[in-house]
Length: 324
Image: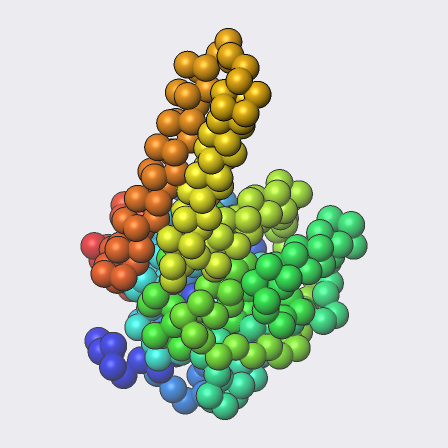
């Protein structure tokens, strides 16, 4: 058994219905990492496949002690699959890549060389992308522009799965939804040093792409929440406080308007009771937002982060045996 301190490299590969690609991908990865002459582990995460991928992965794990397999009970999505792989990874450096054979495992060496220059995260750039123009390239370019403008990242390709991380960076990440596209942005929040290199991209030969335009809309929704997360993570009172101040201002304007009609114009207001009630509601709501901001700031400052992963019921296999 290899101890955690002796593991140099972990390679995390999420898979969903990639039966035709698994064997060739494994052999290509193995050829590359064997040439590194470093201790390594290959973590395949089966995200609820229905085509025999799971059985094939178990066979690989039985014949190669460096292969570890996580089998999720159903299809949770790529972010959840990657998070599950991160959770059990033991390497000082963690590499992620897609299981569809479009990423070239030979680029692993170049990622390691770049991270050896002192970077915490190295992201791949599929400069010569082998995908359909309207279904993949154009939506991806739009998403990249939006993500970079919101997160202030200087990357060309945020959606490339081929990335390298230092373990201390990924240990602090919590992924859900489509946040796997935003790992560099989440790492930046933690103060990570980020680089990008051009990597190879190959056309898909076997299997079908799991990408559709619905994912683009999910990415945009997660991007809006990430924007708030980036801006107000360190001091959530700034967000809640701004909302509270707006309610205070609305209440103040209403009180001035009531006072003007009552004391300057000396005009009776038919709905005075309703207006006074609205005034108190606005001010109470403002106080509530202020209070929530103070509580949120207190939670952030105490620094408590729950350990664990939402997929607590996943099954993990190593060498064909169940590892709870």
